Image 1 (tube, rainbow, N blue to C red):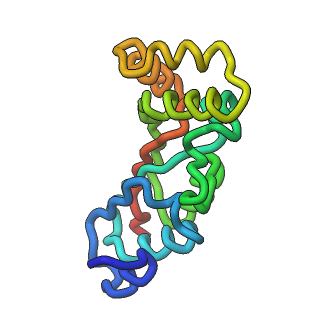
Image 2 (image 1 turned 30 degrees about the horizontal axis):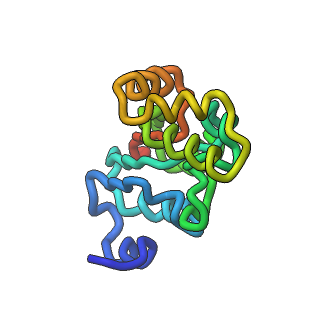
Image 3 (image 1 turned 60 degrees about the horizontal axis):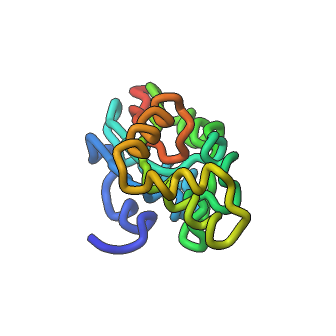
Length: 161
């Protein structure tokens, strides 16, 4: 099926799915809270909702601010913080886990945008030199491990009662 997420979910009966996966979708929705509620209805009890998105209250966003690749204007319509994600899921879901993804592309793009359109910092010149290399990949991996990156994956289960 192809169409708007909200309309496509309405086509399916409640309790139909074991798993719903939404890869880099939530930030493109007008109302991700209502979509999460619809997804909860469509999942079987104990079913999993797995999704990836961007999160604003991270070190990466604090460093890059308006040049952060997570903003990706105008395609991203919603910008979530950890509390927003937890609030969106808390009523219908349990076992909520947020894992930061290592993505050197985000650092590279953010630094590139700041070098091109803003006031570049020493870090931006360093990232430019490392771009495409193993050291930037390792740096992104360490940043994700420390919970500093804005790109995240979320897993949760629909409450059984």
